Every structure is written in structure tokens, then in C-alpha cells.
Image 1 (cartoon, rainbow over the protein chains, first blue to last red):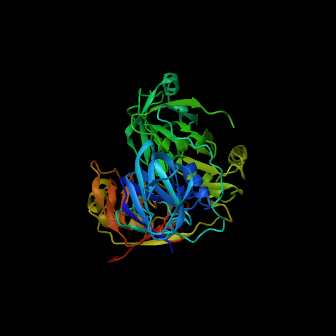
Image 2: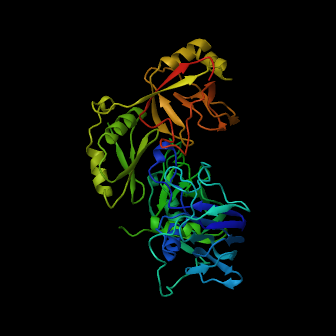
Image 3: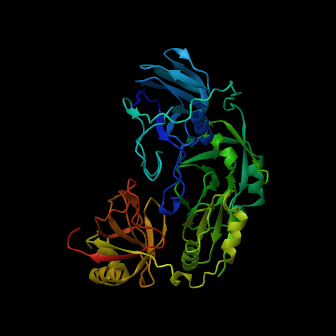
Length: 289
Length: 210
């Protein structure tokens, strides 16, 4: 059984797969990798099924040692990655030898690296998933220094021989996200809707796997009063009493009591995982399906 | 019965009712007639989120299903008999006396009414497995604490508004505590991770020790 010893985890390292949909009625969010396409890509690069568990590594500063030869791939955030001192290309499968040391430097673009290891991280499943839910506090514990992670059996699929595909780092400048209408769009004034789409929003420091607060104009309500808590989907933009919007993410509370003005379209949601504090965010209308 | 369909992304819609009773009836009717491709139903106080796998159940089809389903008195419909669980309670909560006093009954009478009522899990909120329980047999409304406790132990049996509940894990909380149980409300490693599931019936039974 291959093992990975995480020697230096950096600010936050979590085991995540594609989550546990279908349990919201029990109060359990879907959770799972925040950048789902990055996890699926990293897995494909090493021949894993898309939903194998990997590591979600916030901002880098990570070091790990492999006890056996295997294949790895790193996607998502973009920065200096080396194995035994030799640079590793982003978004590509890399072979590591027994005893090799992987170092992932500070993210220069994006916020979350995803590391896939051939065979997947083999932590115990809870509710059908190996994902850490940071709000409900279950699933594999955050990875601390010295943690030894077991790697699952080698999958049937071989490591695909791909020509180097064009790989683009997460953008450093303004990011435009597509929005679908929210259930409580009519609770907001026309001016609020105009502001939502016209303003240059800033991604705030108050951003984690539960939700991400945006800095910008206050969004004014047309309907006053309280909303009875109701279930939300990932990407829902709820607006608190002070008019400030928050994008609810994978580990959000299953129900929320603030009205949802709009919903970040699924195709744009992975980009939210890679936003950094201070980065500019703009919204556009999603094209109808 | 009114039901409004509100957009909630490209794989869900939010159905809004006027009352919790309508939510409960509609939830039972939908749950008893779930089409292939329905991912889940998430009831709340006035709404039900209907989440689908759009490749198997297009959102338009789900909307038609929700609009057309009959839900008058559906809660008691034959063929959908909800299961029941019994929760053993020691009625010694810190707020039992105060809550009873607020309602103008004795602590013993409040505990007796809590046991006599047939409760139903209306929805889960606040935390995994935290069921909001309602009962037609429960006439009381209890205000929340003005200042929530920073630490409520797991298994605390509590009241707030017209709801009864049990804290699945230690957490902060503003409900009034009337007792405690050692029933396991939340176990993510179990096949059925929560004791309380929307629609399930619940009885409370007094015991001398948990």
C-alpha cells in the first residue's frame, strides 16, 4: 500500500472528493472539492475515476514524501512545484519515485491546488464520501504535519499518454461569473439588480469553503422583513441585512434565512474557488441552457 | 392550497407554500410519488427544495410534477405510513421550570404534554440531524432565550417557538432546555446518519436516568 507522509501542510489541507449529494434533507451539505473540475482533471491525468479523493491545498507551502513509486498530478492553483528539486509541469501527470519529496510553493495564481495521487487518497468514507465538511466538522480531519495518508489500489485505467494540453493558470485580473436568477430576486429593488451586474465587486478576506463575502455597494431590499429559512444550492448569493452579498459554497449551512438574489451558474462556480482576496469580480447573465 | 415555484439554479426549484402544514402535506405527497431522477426533497418552514438530476428528470418535468400533484390531506394518505421512533428523556433541563412557568403550567404537566404529543419531524435545520418537530397535540409557544448559550450539550431536549428538538451535538444554542437523552441523533459513520428524518414520527418517554 502506497503511503504519503505530509511533512508540512501549509495553511489548510483537506481531503476532498466530489462530495455527498442527496443528504441536504438530513442537514448535510454536499461538500466536496471546491474546484470540482480541477479535481476531475487531476484524477484523469493519473488514470483515476473523476471522483477519487485528492488533497485540496490552500495557498501552498506544502511538502510531502512518497514511500513508493507512483504518479501524481497537480491542478487548480498555479505556482512553483518541485519533486526532489526538479520542477513539475502544471496540469500534467508526473512520476515520483520511492522516497521522493514533493514541494508545492506559494500559489502565484488562484488559491487552491488540487493534488491527485494514482489510486486516490484512501480515507474512511462517511455518508458515501471522503470529503471533509468544514462547517459540520466531519469527514477526514484536516491534514496536520506528520499525517500519513494511505493511497488506494491502483485503478484499472492506465496513466493516459496525453500530448501536453494547453493549460491556463487561474486569471490574476478581473473574473466574470455567470448568474442564474435566484428564488428571491423579487425581494430586491431594480437598483439592486442593476448594481449587482454593473459593480466591480471585490473578493473579500472573509472567504472559505462555507461562503465568500463580496465587497461593493449594498444591495437594497424591496421586501422588508424576515425570511423563513429555506434550502439553498451551491453558488446561491444570499444578501444579509446590511445589503452585503455572500456566495454560498460547498460546506454552507443547508438552509439559510437571508434572501438569495441570484445563483452563480455551475459552470462559473469552480472559478470562485480560485479567487483571492482583493481580486475583482464581475457578474453577467448566464446564457439560457 | 397555493404553491409557488421559484427558480433555484439549473438543477433545482424552490416550492413555496403559505403554511408549514401545507409544506408537510406537499412533502408527503411528493415523497410518496418520487419520479426517477429526483435527487432530493429538502423541506423547510415554508418551502421545499426539489433537486433533480437534469439528465434524468428535466427541470420542466419536475415543475409539472410539483404543480399537478394532489396534496390535500396527503399526509394521511394510505400507502405512506411514516415510521416512528421513541426517545427516552430525563426531564431535568435547566429551563424546564422557567418554560413551564412562562406557559402557566407545572413542570410535571409540561413534561407530560411533551410525552403525550405525537411529534413529526417537519424539517432539519441549523445542523446535521437537528430536527424541527411539530405536533397537532402541542398547544404551547416558548420564546427562545434572549442570550443563546455558548455551549449546549449533545442530547439536550429543547423547545423553541412551537417546535421541539434535540441537540445532535454539542453546540451553541438558544432553545430552552427541558431534559436530556442519550439517544444518538447524529452518527456520520452509520448507514442512517441521523435519527430524525423529515416525515418521521417521534415519541418522547420519561426515564429516571438516560
